Image (cartoon, helix red, strand yellow):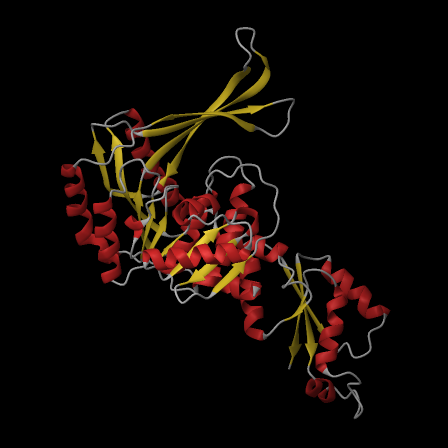
Length: 431
């Protein structure tokens, strides 16, 4: 399976993806949490750094760029300095914002987070202050939005809807975009807001709600895999979806098709520092995979990895395909001690070189293993990050004049013996 996921990441190409939704500016105030204030029973934060990052739908677009996709963003900002800042950041990271409109009746949505360090320990979020308006777009702006957007939908390989319930994702806009995308054969993927009215997403290809959002939409509390499957089936039926990805934090993703079939996609345990942005990363990764025409189950597995890498970071950060490949190569037990086919080996070497690993190659018959074999294989392994051990086939051993009774052990058995060579080693037959 890991070879399959590595191949998937390597063949994603550079799809053009539209992100529609609520734009947010994330501002981070960093400092040392030194003591309790004398004025009130609150922590005193001594600021030493301030930074801004793209949030909401603009963060999804930014993450797509990090994953080597082309991203176009559709949404609104206010007629204020924060709106200017959002546009400048989009320009800087390479997100096309031709469909970002200015709404003078509302402020740009801003989430300001205060991050404190105490006694040189890992920083943690202390407080968040939001500035926002949640009223829907005016009918006039709604009409202008669709007039600009709908004629251009055909140029996109996928449409991602990032609904934070800040007013952009009105029922009219959603139904118009979803139906237009469906008619054009474009995958439409929705990360819904945590509410109960999901009918507005009807007709989308898939949704990616988390555990709480799924409970609010279906009334099903999810504590087991079967409950997640039941909720996913209800979502597919309610919303006429092709499939649903129910994200379950450390339990992975429950994938459910509209025919009722379901599969749990587990994830490995990670050190969680900040869950901010994990849902956006899952949405972006699934969007890139669906845009490339990949199998939706394998796309979900890769999204698990991307979401896991995201929670290991503080705040919202972008990830690259190289980081995902490196995680697959480093942590997958399926790759370790595995006899590889030629086509698998080609992809393995390409993936390892892409993430900067040094690949070492050696070969031999290894019919009767002895201390000389073990010593030089250990030496070869120390020369790089990955050792490829090529094992001569039975025909090759005979051609080398080892004698009519050689090999003593068939190539399949000698390949299994090669598993003792150590972690991260690949072996294959050499003709």
